[in-house]
Every structure is written in C-alpha cells, then in structure tokens.
Amino acid sequence: MAIKVPKVYRLKGTCNDVEVEVEFHEDVVEAPKKDSKFVVEITSSKDECLKHYFCAQGYVVSNTRLGDAYRVVISLHGFLAVIKGKQKVDLNVMEQVYLGVSFSR
Image 1 (cartoon, rainbow, N blue to C red):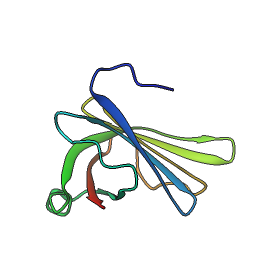
Image 2: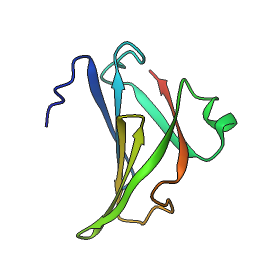
Image 3: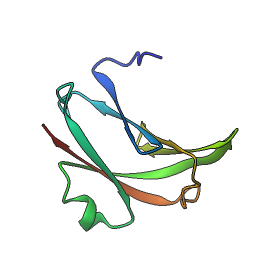
Image 4: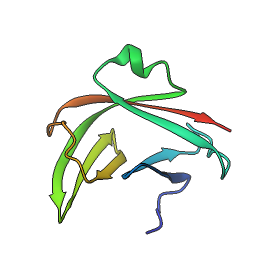
C-alpha cells in the first residue's frame, strides 16, 4: 500500500524471520540508497538510542497476534514503526520506547 502523505516514505527490511517497517519524512531523514543496509534498535534507554543516526521517542500502540505471527506497532508521534515476527515481542501497550536507526552503504 502506498503512503499518501507527501514526502513520507516507508523503509522496509527483514532480518532472520523478523520484518521491520519504519516511516520517515524526507525532510528529517533522507531516503537511503536502494542497496543500503540499516540497523534498528528498540530500547528504553535514550542514551543508547542517541548513538544512532536517527533517534525518536515513541509509544507501543499495539502488540497483537495475527494468525501464527506477532505484530508490534510503535507510534513515533504519528509516524509508525511495525515489527512482525513469529516470536512474541516483550513490549506492553503504552510503554515508552526509543527507536534508533543507523544506515550503512
């Protein structure tokens, strides 16, 4: 599904059997090149998050099971991060988290 908000893009990646999607605004985080790799860290520590190129505070808005997979949605003040996988993620709804993202080429 395409995003209809101007200058907003969705970064998608997979590591092992975990899928990650994070929304960014082009004026804040320039879209990486197609073959770029990225690291996503979800932490309760602001200091750990600040080690990344991008760091945002957010809240877990849902942690649900859909069929045989789990999905966690984190709101970064309107922008969303979605984590999907076979293992339950130990995050609670309304838990404050920090999401850090770093890019490499």
